[in-house]
Image (cartoon, rainbow, N blue to C red):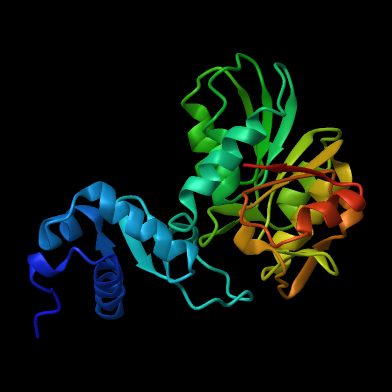
Amino acid sequence: MNDTLPKQNMSSAKERRALILSKLESKEEVLVTELSRELGISEVTIRKDLTILQSRNLLVRTRGGAIRRPVENLNEDTAISKKRMFYFKEKERIGEEAAKLINEGDFIMLDSGTTTMEVARHLDRFQHLDIITNAMNIATELMRYKRFNVVMLGGNVRINSHSTVGPLALSVLKNFNDYKLFLGVDSFSLDSGVSTPNLEEALLNQQMIQQAGKVIAVFDSSKFNKRSYVHIAELSQIDCIITDNGLPSGMKNRLKNAGIEVRIV
């Protein structure tokens, strides 16, 4: 069955968006270039359609198109290759804003995650930084600068997150203190704080937080009002949150009342 309507009928935004959603029922991803060509509509208009559909929680924008909105399972240890497709523009802006909290010569810790990766990608203006990370992909990203002192925590490799965990990682971490920690977050709520589906990740994050001079949580707004299996930190242990403007109504004021600095991008 042909699921495309005649191009001359595609002037209706409602029809276009319905067709896009219909396509996503039969395939995992649609591309802007393909939709533009099939429907005879400019790529600018298609991107606007996708943005509107995402705002209605009907799909997730990706680089060059959109994918089906995933069925949410907060206790699933999702692979980083899949996570990086979600909210990529928000993560880029969060990473850029987070880098503004870094000063020349700082000692920082970058936790594993797709949003902390964006912090690593916004360090061009610095000449000297001391950086610790447990994320192999982030360490690789930092190497391209060719001027930072980078310490990679050892330990057992977690394939899903490209990170290291376990007793060796904890042992090495205990040698460092008073760094600025940029913490990735899987789930966040006012009642239970920060949580994750992985116990080993949680244990390492708890140690990171305990030894940090400042804790900056970086995560997109989809993580709010969520709770996973394993507790990491209470609200009182977080100094600053950087997120996008999709956070729930009233959340910013409630966080500020809890003594947390909130930065919205």
